[in-house]
Length: 162
Image: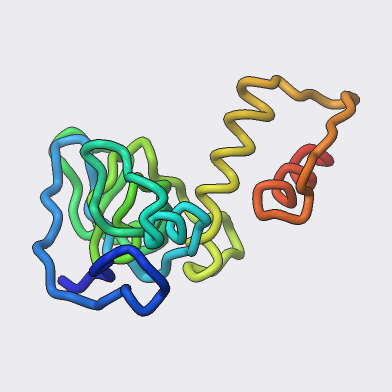
């Protein structure tokens, strides 16, 4: 498969398209054929050599993607080959294929294109887990968002208002 790799830390010119090995799919993972990915701040920082990916994560950039499931591990029952999904990744979204733990996959919301869905997982999971699960924001409560013009800020405002 092809993937965007970093030849050395630096400006965007250090990104190169190369042939790399297909990812292996573990029993609790699915293999997604990536159709779209998103650019996140950490991708830029990693390209500059200022961010180290977590141990065991893909060496390739890309923390979220959307695409079609190509195969599923033997312990995966919720997803099937052909499902169109978006996923929150520890890396690998800048490749043609990525293996992802099944719990990090989301169905694509109705009316959302695969292209737009690629930018959904990072902001939605960040806001949902911090504001609603940990912070337990509920109807009628006030909520202040610093940085409301960012992707996470915009999503927080839209979802805290509903």
